[in-house]
Amino acid sequence: MAATETRKDVVLDVKDLRTYFRTRWGEVKAVDGVTFDLRKGETLGIVGESGCGKSVTMLSLMRLIPMPPGRIVDGSISLDGEDLLQLSEDEMSKVRGSKIGLIIQDPMTSLNPVFSIGNQVTEAIRIHQDIPRHSVMERALDVLRKVNIPAAETRVRDYPHQMSGGMRQRVVGAIGISCQPMVLIADEPTTSLDVTIQAQYLKLLKDLQQDSDLSLIFITHDFGIVAKMCDRVAVMYAGKIVEMGSVRDIFNNPSHPYTEALLASVPKMEEDVDRLYAIEGQPPTLHNLPPGCSFAARCPYVMDKCREQYPPEFNVAEAHHSACWRLE
Ligand SMILES: Nc1ncnc2c1ncn2[C@@H]1O[C@H](COP(=O)(O)OP(=O)(O)O)[C@@H](O)[C@H]1O
Ligand SMILES: [Mg+2]
Image (cartoon, rainbow, N blue to C red; front, side):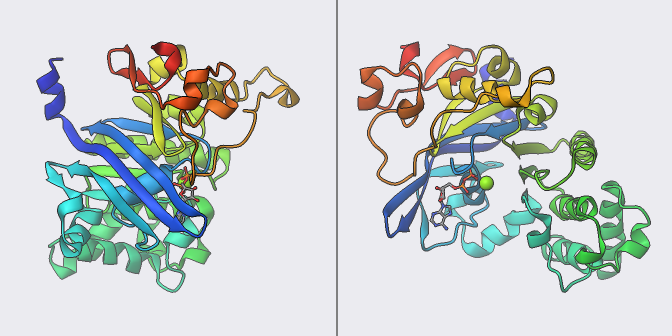
């Protein structure tokens, strides 16, 4: 495909995003120069250990960063040609839900325990969509059926605690898609689900995506899910994307030592659990980061240069880049 054609398909274009938090230990650079794009109908996986800035990146896209202590200090977030960082709070609240939606990790905290399921889904629709009052419940039932809630007409009267974890996660999914967003962000949506329910939920997300040409950002620390769900992958470490490429590139030719280590820590069926490879050391705390590559302290290939200067992005192949001095 020609470069211009590919650009035309881009629905979300994030450039040099920086989100910092003021803490009493100093400034935490949770997101520190993140650049990526997302095309129509595509699924982008974002992987990395906990604390590396995945959720803060997504909350920044939704403009849901608590300010203070947080602050988006730089960058642009272009959604469907509009820079979200330039919108007023009112304008942004219209975009949220209608053009870009977020499904978060814990369905219990994202549902309000004192309102019925029906109430919460219709509320989301009412806020964002200009449809006649009497059709709102019809639309809510539609989306609940879409996420395979059995007997939706009666379940709408249920409260969150009356549903199983899997059902609650589906309801959260229903709210996420109720206004037909262009971009849906799923932030570790299956972490609290057991394996069978997780597989059903992933299939459901895939089906919804195919029905509506939805672009999906899928955050996970599970490479098995990445292989099943994603077209491209961004690997995040200490607030930065350290490697990005197609799923095939990342699995077959991981070029950043951190990606290599993450892949090596994935349990394989035939292996004993006690032979699992774990990455030595901890991710760094994100304040007062030393100069140079943030992975240097844990990297088996570290060179002097790595401790002095942060590596630029090197192209490994077309649309596959990695920030590692070994590629210089
Ligand atoms: N409200 C906050 N105040 C201070 N630091 C925060 C806040 N929210 C997140 N952070 C910091 O931002 C960093 C990235 O967090 P997060 O994006 O949640 O990581 P993850 O990759 O696990 O989703 C962490 O170091 C975290 O401590
Ligand atoms: Mg997170």
